[in-house]
Image (cartoon, rainbow, N blue to C red):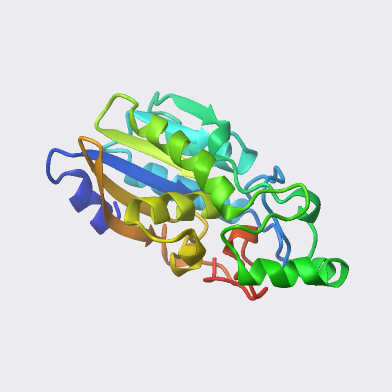
Length: 236
């Protein structure tokens, strides 16, 4: 078991919230793309990452798993739940940011077609909405209530499986950080965040625990990992 995780799971009497980003999908490996609610599956690396956490949690499994209903999250959740008889509840409120007309498009193509909007996104990341899409504040306003509902599930350990953008907006909320600072928080594919819940008061114990030395990959991040200037965020 991951040493930090093992120590945390057995310490104290607080409720333990495990906030996990889904495993790798390879989406956008060919060229930087906006990948939000495209329903892409896990790749081999992503399945490996999910199996890693399944093994780590075998001795202290979560009482309940709440997952974004997008396929990459549900696959991650079901791999972890397999053999543990742990219920998995899909939650649409935990879906990744809605990117509207930009969904699936390359950064290069968006910059060519909507140059003014692309520049505006960089100036006001928290409030900017692509055509037909959400802003990161919109995302936060639906994801935080979904998170709060999930942590009210019975049991001492609750696993929430979501996305880079979703996790960042939840963590910004818990830390009291402005939404515009979301890219100061790394969220690698398959990475885990540990949160203590003391009667509704949350304390961040650890951020972005990667599943193994092979958990990182040399590829392009998903849309929520892109910095507003179009450069990649932290490597995934």
